[in-house]
Image (cartoon, rainbow, N blue to C red; front, top):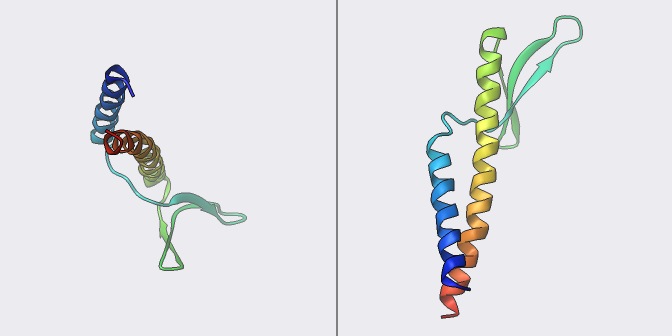
Length: 95
């Protein structure tokens, strides 16, 4: 791997680290709508093989969706950082 390629990968990792810092609150889970006639928003989370539901109400629904989206973005960033860091580690091991 060339120095320029290694430097580019390091810059990308730094950019991803900055993105992590700007994410804001995160929550694993999703917003679900429950009910046939009276549809109501809940936050659903599977923990220890059990589903936990939290009633949100209309006023908290958007906030919970944003937290869930932030969590998904966090996972995407971590995955990309993992691939880059593995390549960098592999390169260092071969030197």
